[in-house]
Image: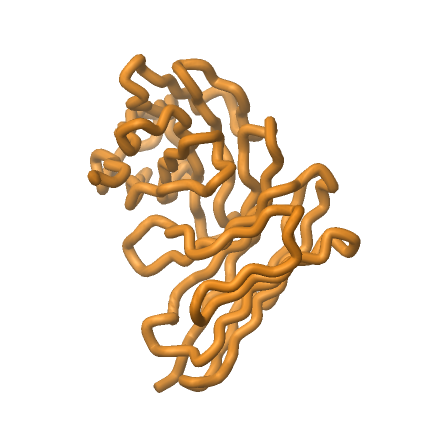
Length: 112
Length: 113
């Protein structure tokens, strides 16, 4: 069935270092891959997304890469700051599927 | 513009009772999806509504149901509550069935005792 695997489940980095979160999806029909950030007491917030016709997308300190052949996509955060500490979710969906499948989440700690 | 509004924020119910949760999407968004979030299972898809029609449903028992009104507001209902239904229930609205991303509400924290 449809599945999105996300690694690692916990990630601790020093302020200023980079953080990388990796996801693998199973449904080859998936064509839209959003990333969400969830802070304590809040719902997830969309931070960046990528479509299957694009290999890489960047927005300031965050970037996402997609390898359709391997069904892998990754989130890269550079120059991490304490306010980046949160739970990050990758997700996958496809046109007409009417639902989004989420990874299990990565808890990122940025130490000052 | 106003975000996604979920009410109530917190709820405590007893096993066997039923509960109704409400969601008001962003103005203009016609797609509303519901997710259950638990520490062990992550974000699990419950159902999606578009123009008052349920177009997809997750693997949850029939005790979980929902509906959408003509103004796109949505409700979900859980009957015969079980302890395992304790979770954060998140509503997400989007323009186009999640493609283009969801805007989530802050959720309703349901505790079943």
